[in-house]
Length: 101
Length: 400
Image 1 (cartoon, rainbow over the protein chains, first blue to last red):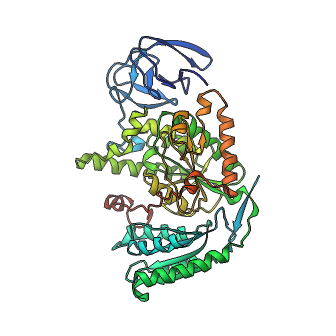
Image 2 (image 1 turned 90 degrees about the vertical axis):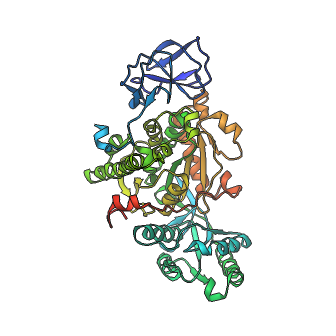
């Protein structure tokens, strides 16, 4: 693996930084077979996520090939993706099967 | 593939040969701890429950304590009663004795106080430890092993390497005829459709949806009705600092501990498994309650993934700590047994890391002591107490 960031599933819209990454630098990530370069807009702490593509407000954020939550604002490629711009509706009152559908 | 274990009279196999000092009520916990402290080879299964409990609540406590006493890692049991508790020492002892192992009782009120009870208990425990000290390990196949999987102090690498590597080890255990459990239902929200697809039949799939749904409904009601924001308990501040953003993200990573085997059943809290294979046990997300539930369910070893590092252990089941972070491994070296951060560092593959964990399970099953054991950590002994919300949601009986 020995890379700066990992994309777990080719469908994912985020990558995970495996070291602290500074803003303004291009970061190369492998998505499936291809390599892509993303310019980081912010400092990304170790273990945190950044966007690989534009994610519109309300759109699902994909990690592990699954929706982990919805964007609360428009997220641009290279943005830090965390609790300030993503929220999950799970565990808030609606039934799990309904929410999963 | 074999391991060296201790044969019990009922055919179960222990990986340890403990004499357990077991109080039915917390009032006797101090005496139990003092007896265990004086007798090498004895462990106290002390807890804070058992007083004035009724119904569903009492049933769960009773099942947990009985099944801990029946556990194959326990060679013999000394039940230390107070005398006036609802779960009587004799009831606990008679249930455990059905396994054929020696069970003795000392009761504080009958003996005339804690000093006399400690004295009597030390003498009994000393005799039991000496009796089992000559028992030798014999070889057994993996079908005699059950492994609990647990995570605590999750960071972003738990889901990327530590949990998937444990998942590979879980698949190896199940493929060789053994048993694996995953629990912490509140930390599986958002994965139920993926888990249910792996159920061996529709009944098991329905139970997976049911237990995760019930847990989410309770969280929803709790966060709608009061100002305690119970939902926030799903993600700790440490999880957020470590890069975990939502409960679903944590769940997807956590579920990887269960590997890819089919689910053969859903177990109630602290319920013992029957057939071999992969199970979901209905437990809350707290490390102690969850681990104690699976140990009571007859798991002999716990595979515990931790991102940020935690020292905890269980008095009767060895706990193997696995991290996905080389940084945490180095920083918390005294408390973490295996580093899968090597996969992130490019030093080995996930498959190799999973096989290493499986080999460590066999070594620990055969007598190798984990770091938590050597350092005497036993904090994970915690009996789950359901709230009145659980009692209402679960109804009377079915899931009690």
